[in-house]
Length: 160
Image (cartoon, rainbow, N blue to C red; front, side, top):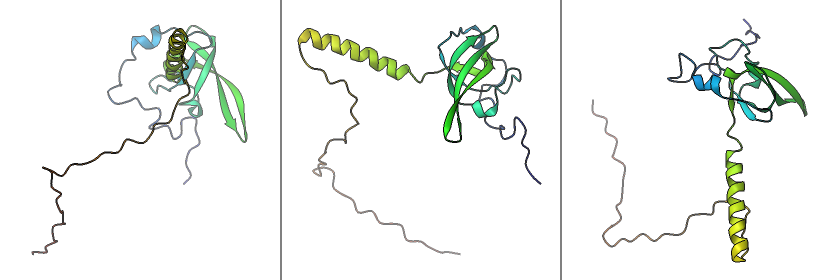
């Protein structure tokens, strides 16, 4: 017997509500205001069937291009073959959330601007590029009051 190819096939877990997230949808979902240009993540809420995007867009990040009363239009780039196609998807606000993908970048830009300002005032050069995390420094373990122990496995016994 073959498997179904319906619109919601294979979404048993991806569209399920999270642990302790069942029941009424929070009011903050409806009170949040979206503007054109906002970066949003599409997270399908299985409790709301209206305005639900196709399962292929679940987990994707896009840019808001249109705002209506209950929904927003989102531009997403979908991989088709060897290229990306711009798709415009209209999604109800229950199925989207503001993306936090740029938070770290914006924080870094502000820190760099502040550092540049300080360095200019002091007349020094500031290195702004991110550096990879270096290996931890070497350590010396003292055996003065910490003698090494020899650990051997317990022999296996077969007592019936």
